[in-house]
Image (tube, rainbow over the protein chains, first blue to last red):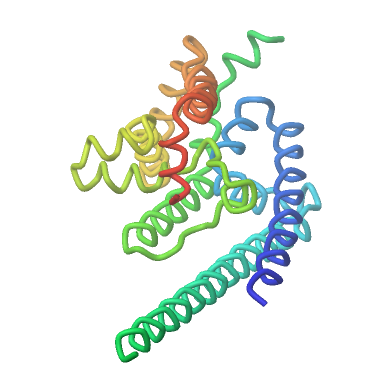
Length: 109
Length: 147
């Protein structure tokens, strides 16, 4: 279950990155290299610039897609990682418990 | 063409639009507050998906450390944090100053950018800094992505 969430999270993040790159290309085309590099460094600037010019450049759906995919993707990835970590911890605890049981049995014998 | 691109005002054009400057200040403050209080800010898809920090990764934490007076931590996280803070302060000034001093400030920044191309140079330096850190200091990059 955890790995499935990680996989789905990665997929959504990939779509989010593609949306981000498309907005970045628009920024480079519209404002030139300087602001393009600024958008590359600071994703929040890119997002703000996108929303400021969304109606003019007709990119509102792209921006909403970017936000939704990135937030959902990061959330699923975090949840998946937490679940996988928890199941690993449980496995470790089980193996520790079984080795402890073996030691106790050995001492009793 | 190259000279025109290099010396084109970047900061001044961001500062010229009051609404844009105001929104940038608000979003930066919200992001800073979220990160400083230990909550997740805007997630970086590059960091999450590819496992490498993007050029701006660590900037918010570095600025937060700088505001707490932790210079060493701040510079270790991101060397451009002081410059980023100055840029943010200028944008915040452009958002809040009355019209006449605001125009004067924007004109001054525009003149400096036209004469020196400083913003573009700093942005190129930032990209080089990111590449160098990624290639030659992988332990810093790993710390930035929380490994």
